[in-house]
Image (cartoon, rainbow, N blue to C red; front, side):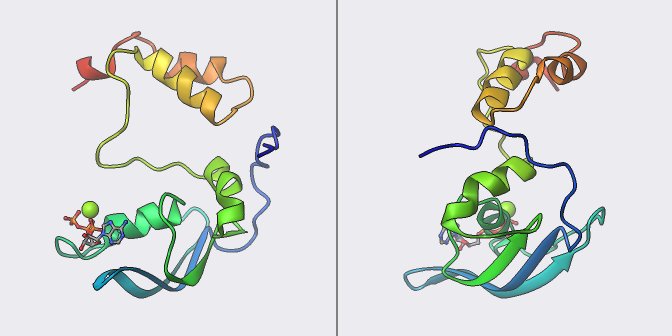
Length: 142
Ligand SMILES: Nc1ncnc2c1ncn2[C@@H]1O[C@H](COP(=O)(O)OP(=O)(O)OP(=O)(O)O)[C@@H](O)[C@H]1O
Ligand SMILES: [Mg+2]
């Protein structure tokens, strides 16, 4: 696989930030979510409410390209959700999951350096410095 090492353009998508059309995730007999459709405008704060097991987290994981939908379609930051677009989508989004996958034996700065490297973020040093003023370990944080 060849990665395009350029940073994603900051704002080039004039349409909705997220557009989801009849998106469905099934696994055997189990349906995680069924024919979900919604749109989120750029800059809009959008919340999803639902009971335990309603499919909220699975929807976010699907839109974040971590798992593939069974049917339906979506566009994230102007990029169609498709296996060949996963890298392009991940470059343009950020997700704060319920259980952040941080390395507790690394410092905050080391974690940020590691993930900046994975995302091939250009010149991340300044941003890392601003985010990590105390050189703490993630386990030290409240
Ligand atoms: N990769 C997957 N493929 C298919 N089904 C899945 C997958 N991951 C989770 N599910 C199923 O999706 C359903 C919805 O779970 P999910 O965790 O998305 O609900 P939730 O709305 O986030 O619940 P909670 O409020 O408890 O966080 C569950 O039945 C779960 O087993
Ligand atoms: Mg959840």
